[in-house]
Length: 343
Image (cartoon, rainbow, N blue to C red; front, side, top):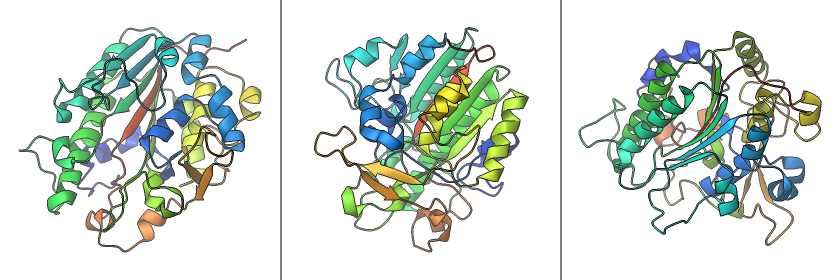
């Protein structure tokens, strides 16, 4: 979030209000798996069993006294009535108090603005609420991700320019709107992407399989905003002590503590937390996370700083000092009174 960053300049101006954990590692390199891993509160030590048997984030939130809201801004391509995505089942869907499914009646580049409108509305109700907001972000064709007349100052052309435009329009602008527009006195937001982007000739940008996976497909941002000064100090301490060590697998235990669950209960399953320490091995999983083919998931080790070290003719080099993976993903937002203790 450098002030000279041409892709996320508005977020750079708000950096004093954000805790930046640096380049982080997503649960998977594909939206399908990453979103499921987050909602199912998965933990790496027993991934498949946790995906199948753990309570969902909605169940945890409701038990802790929170109203639950899900906003899906990536559902426009789902045209079959009643069809869900990212491994969501009807049973899971009906367990959510309020489900917003934004469809193709909204222009692609307006989806994240509508998502922010809904988040602000739900946060303003005043009751304890847990919001999982799945942004549309920047998806191919990237040219759909911003209005035709909008252009970032990235100095690129073609696909890379379209991508930069989409990131600045749908993430920098809309996330800044949310940070400026929400009442954060009793709220905490965790922002990340569901996967990264690999811009290499002849390769998929994400969702590669098995041995053909590039680490950049799983390098994502991890940002936190909170109005609670004690929580802010704790987040900042961990971000400083463990730079570039955050993972999606640290989000579930963080949410559980924010909801009021006992740390002793949480540590029995989870190793890392954005509120305590980030010591887990940095890995992401691809392909089968349900144990349908094998009980041994395909794990890939990754160094999040690889994004800074590679000298390639891709977006990461062209956009000097930027963090281009801040493009897709969900906002986990807990708003309401001080976290309550569960029985």
